[in-house]
Image (cartoon, rainbow over all chains, first blue to last red):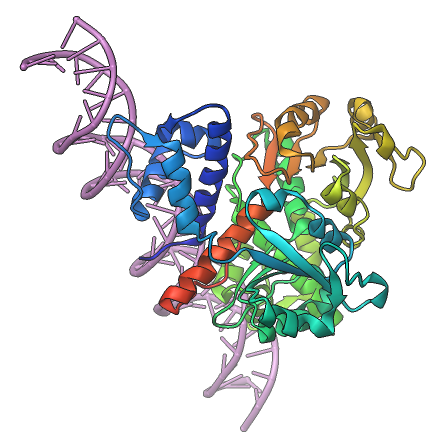
Length: 216
Length: 216
DNA sequence: CAAATATTGTGAAATAAATATCAATATAAG
DNA sequence: CTTATATTGATATTTATTTCACAATATTTG
């Protein structure tokens, strides 16, 4: 089954939207409801579902609980959920203490840095020397890491991560990392995002028209 | 000229790559060099350039300095560059003190929050009451804001921002914000990104194949 | 100066993604 | 129980994006 990235990202968003709808008391939803909540079209929702074999009832929509479980199953959240952070600077530290992940079943289990002043071996989420990265990752079977080091170090550190067995990297350094064959990398570049906003605002100022909102 | 978002994002990345190439001593580049540095194909680079009317010399490539200036011009970095942050929690605070933006000509000029304990009126980058948001934004002609409040507050705060005249929002809250007609919103959802990595790692574990790296 | 060569710039082709359409059908109404 | 109706699910259509292919042309070499 060939699945593209965008489709999976949307699936994740559907799940988030479903949780909110559930909190509002929804027991079943129609593709249109979900489309509104996730900011897409109902065709898109049904198309995505059909790719994953998710089915509802004609005229009856989808049961919220079943749907959440099915998506969670597809996203594989029960198989990997421990995440480490490399680079405990501004951004890394914020993510280390970000509470939003826990609710989604993602656990930040440790931070790593090269600066001894940052080490906190006995904190709830320990901050350890980068030297210990490989052994920690292997002992704890970690597959996902967040990279939040300065740009000059990013490439080097990504190699350390990959060598240790990390298979997925969320990269905050403002360079385009290229992974190995079996490693997937998501690049988040905040400056690029801001520049993008600025461009479209300026463009709107000139033409009076603004492109529709989209992401990724 | 109809221009899509992805294309602009790439332009921004080309600029970053060019800066790095320049630092390495490059005076001119070929589309292939830039493609490698930015992780795309050379066709893509040339096509993007042709959309914006950027030209080089056949057989001579592009002059790095000219190219950087031209891209900077297109991205409009000389017109808007002041940015505010609403929500000085974990993430907001990290971004407030993130040094990476300055080099790119983006200035974080203030943070806003509703928690009086966070106010720092006389700090280098002041943290002010949300009540003062509108007057600050209007007096300082701010058009771009970063939204980093808890999800339950996100929608409400986005409305305050838009009412104050903000035209571009970089949203870190894990809900899909929908802007007004003339407001552009970029959503960055870290949990979704992590889930996505987890999905592809699990998928690779089953099939032995991993999709190529891409973003947005 | 002429010939060889590498690279751009662009239109055409291929691929991928999103949207629209509509028959099938479950639910609800009468 | 029958009819009307709304919604799915799948296919077709449209639109967008990427890649390919190659003529045009600077630059370099002999």
